[in-house]
Length: 66
Image 1 (cartoon, helix red, strand yellow):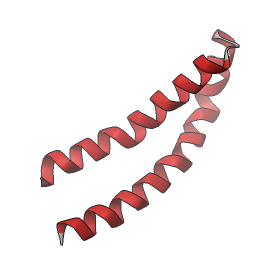
Image 2 (cartoon, rainbow, N blue to C red; image 1 turned 90 degrees about the vertical axis):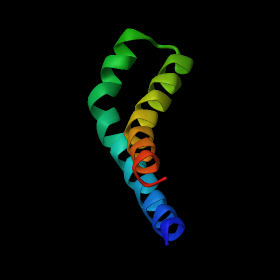
Image 3 (cartoon, rainbow, N blue to C red; image 1 turned 60 degrees about the vertical axis):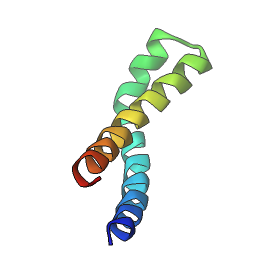
Image 4 (cartoon, rainbow, N blue to C red; image 1 turned 45 degrees about the horizontal axis):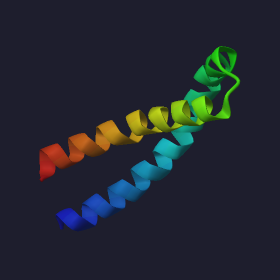
């Protein structure tokens, strides 16, 4: 049962965090673009943002239920 809920909620949260990433990125993206015109820096910032949005809840889920 844990595996089923983990997979279902994991897929749902991955999709939600992907959508949330673009909502957050709309707010902080211009600041990142203003700081650096390098695409590598922008990609790293976007990956870090998504890691925070997805990674912290995923870490909490596994810490609580594993």
